[in-house]
Image (cartoon, rainbow, N blue to C red; front, top):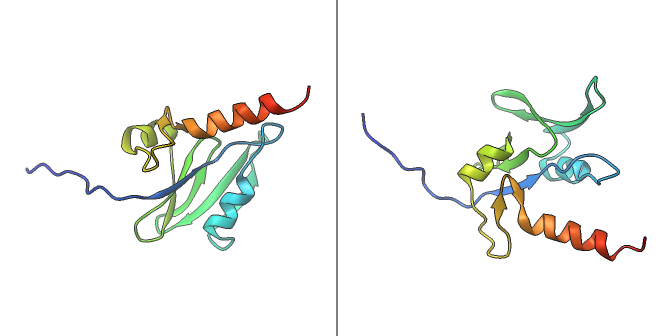
Length: 117
């Protein structure tokens, strides 16, 4: 048995951020993937999920999951802990920690802090 290293490639990814009042990027994700390959659905518990059509069947992205665009243009969800162990940011201004982009957390915090009370 041989050992192999994954070839480093730069991928595009977007984290599914949740539902209001915290804000959501669900519509942006569906627009990015395309309406023929994805759709939004409310679960029985009223959670919002993104359903993604893949070659392996329909996959579900839950809040905090990352949506990855692969090297062949395919889309698939990835759990935050796996994303953090597998990927690092290609943007020096943004780092991935615990599956949440630090730059996104900082921007969200700054935006909330600048809003009038």
